[in-house]
Length: 311
Image (cartoon, rainbow, N blue to C red; front, side, top):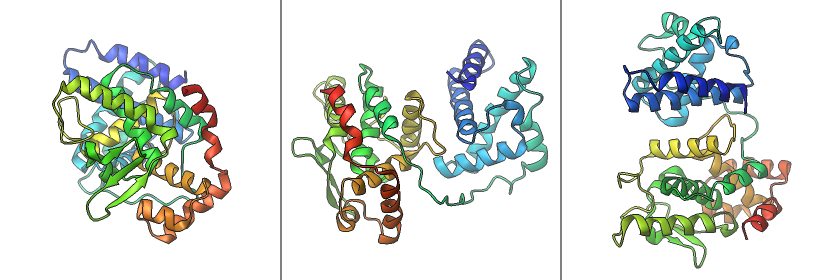
């Protein structure tokens, strides 16, 4: 357990009895602080005393880009960090509250605007160890966890986008023949890597039957209130699963799963045309993925250990 994990648990223990906050607000605040601490770890910031107003601002921009938040929504969530640093200062875990400095210096109507993050020279993808961690989460009796891990592994097995994931219907998934049917402007059949997702998909579909008790939901994936998933909810699901698997990444949305899947396709020896048909990406973008695949040697062999454990 990292130092930040310990701090988050202490903050949760302090926050939960606070009567002035609703349960929903407490849960949201804890999630936002967890995002922030993971962001610090991903950027190798290992001490809260190293956080300043620039770190808070960069984090706000990061969430805007990754989660498709509105500026107002992101500003509201900064309140969670304000409360967190008030608490850390009170208990002696930090020397001050950088959120107050950030707000005084930067929080103007035009300050928190969406901007495109700089493109890194390398694509961030999950490692074989990360994927083993995700597959081990599949052993759960909780409906929401089965659904969430199925979503994550299905994207890894197919390389579909966030928009395509939330619009999937039950009949689009064919586990017997191992493919996904994508409809709309980019209609196509995508062959699935069943070694990745078969168990998770079967477990989830069985859980759906038990939950709906004979009824049929229009969407393949739906919330606990039986509503279709939004793109924002999908981002939260992926981020939560990565956290539960103790995977720390700079970006925690479904894009990192899709990038990993595409690199794996090239690692399996698939051609440009095969990957282009599966992903509908242009050749210039696919060249970058192919270069990463050649660099990391990301082939079919990385899943051998996991498959043997799950048999």
